[in-house]
Length: 327
Image (cartoon, rainbow, N blue to C red; front, side):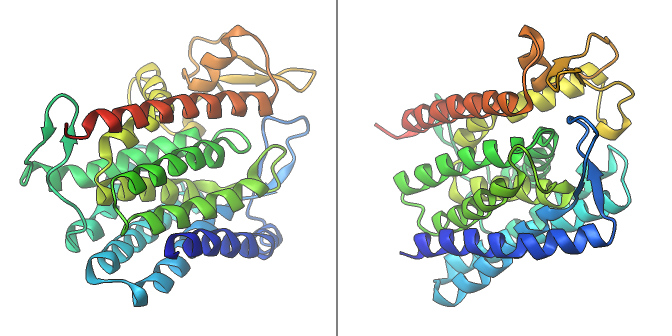
């Protein structure tokens, strides 16, 4: 019952916040150009600020009715969400370097460590339950930074982040239910509700942009939920399109980079409004560029392809989870 209530609260709070928030941001000139459309129409930026606000509402609503363990997880998620959102907001308003941002995002793992909202005994494929009491806490900040940046790098088209991450979170909620992790399940559904509400405004053709404030918060929160729920490996499998997209970009550019720093764009806008892969060897290789290798597509079609790939990887995540269950 609490899980359903948190899902509804996440959805309704984000849906209620977005109209006044988008007007507020537009009135103050906080807008970005939709570069994948003719005329590059301006849209209010940083509307993903609704995500950490919604997480705060849901977490604070859950804590009074929770046992100490569940309350610790709610506080840990809230801390991770707020820290990553603040870093994202700073990057939206005053862009940071490609090396500083991942380092700062590691700080978002501190609430999980401070509240001991994790188990250092993850289950690994072909190995089973392991004991990593020394290594695991050190890996938490790295994991949060990786998931946050991977999700951020996927937010390149209308609805690409919200659509793919909603599929991942729905899969995570199912995994948490199957594994009996009832403390983490309401939090995962709260974030899912928030992203689904945001998707209504961000899907093609978008009315709002999410910004790093929302991307980094969503990615860090997904990482936190995977850690707290003990579903790290299946979540990594579900996120494979995001991980591949990040790997393609980093390897083709020779290291960490910011999209705004790339001199050549990986896709170009055709005269008919469709998008095509650029032939410039100096442009970063991305998942979108790979999808477009077969020919031009509409922006909405590209996002559907990304969501289909995420659905496939999420199915593989379920199979991975089944393989981890002790026989």
